[in-house]
Image (tube, rainbow, N blue to C red):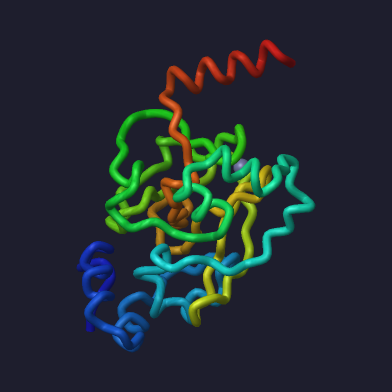
Length: 207
Ligand SMILES: [Zn+2]
């Protein structure tokens, strides 16, 4: 039997391409510690390896979003890929996206609004080919919904300010949270540490 500690996520993804039944993964991906937010995670285990590779299908309540734009405004603001991922809950290919291997110090903002979502200090190499973080900058900025699409139970995450889809969160991340926020680069906009400091200063000046 495979043990998760002995193989990388990348290997698991490659394996996932060859195996269509979930039996093997169910055995391989049993999480040792469960996140109460994803208590059905064992049911999602078969797809967990490629979970980011599948789009979402959740109902994000846009009436609650502080930033609201018309569809035409969203299309004008975003590239077609950003629009597809952030506004249509799509996904992008692993290893062929802007930030999966980004190591620079800075902050990742929501592509749809001026909300800082993740700090590079919490970014880690998950081997999945998508930018991965073990914690959001501010938990209240990131909304969670149960995503039951594609025969899996996953926890979808989105920007709470503008409703843009970000990715999913899983409970197989590193310490200290053991969470893995698997986020699409297309939903993010990177700001270097210096740019971020200037942004914070501008905000403080406006207050
Ligand atoms: Zn946003």
